[in-house]
Length: 478
Figure (cartoon, rainbow, N blue to C red):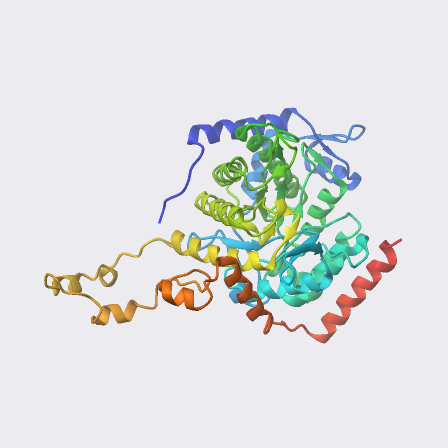
């Protein structure tokens, strides 16, 4: 099925692309990392060391766009969980939410501080839910703040075998995050051959590439893992208020990361990631599920695929609502439907509430069901002699039915069914307590919690991971 939502014409894509090239050649971005500046200078970028400003000649940009891979693999510890980008069947992958500091407790239906136990549960739910393809770690509040990402990453690695997108919290934590990934992979070479992580490199919009952003690229180059070039614009605040203007600015930032990554290591995989926020001018809240942010994410996805020819990743799920209510269901479904149809390879933020501030395990279960339906919708309709049922139709008389046919029996279990959505009679639904969607999802959470998977790691790897986290605490926690 070739249907795809296109918000830009080919001419408009070309116009935006030309402006990206013009900006990088003539206007400077700021790079604060001393070693990064030296690496870029030696590779041919124009560097002003006093101002920490960098521009890029056209031949450097075009060479980077030729060398960056058009496809990549995020590997699972089990090959059945490999995420091949772009998806071989034209579908998409779903990433669980990252970074949130609050957890909507299913027992109380109230938000509280995230704990390390919640992170472990999040990893186990990621492992258990069939349509959640990629894991992420959260921000526990019961560990030292300086090493929260290190503790959390260890917890995710111990509780899911699916690939993980890593969001570092600080420059200092990066080496420990890579050590943990290498420990699980076995060696640096094994991690490079089958990268089980992608690392986020997220500039401060507009155009400030911090020490942490450049170090993430350098460490990724050493380990051979993909870089998620993540622009985080907020339309009307850190980027232009118009969708097209924000897409242009964010694409310049993504292209900058792409070019720098290829100058540091040609052939390093890059995932274009634009997470589009829209500032609510009435109250100052930065929204991720308003129709403006949804259209912006879809437009940015289309542009990156058409102009840069790299896999794409954006916020494809989640809600600005504070609880899993009707607003949540409308926003998360509409967002995922539009952005998946725009061609995003990874739809992120499943299970997210309150504009990225909170996570809900019950919402993750609902998002898993929505993702399953959207994957089925995007897979299209198969047309062949069997599915056309031509012989069955020819052998049918007026007023006949198909319940007794062998063809019906052969295909009757193929339709996607979700245990979260009411499909039985009103009498059956009423006799079972007339439960709404949230209640059914909550009950499924309780059932899953009784037998959540606990993946195994070699004892030596677990012991080494514990040593890494302990060393990080000793060195980084004041």
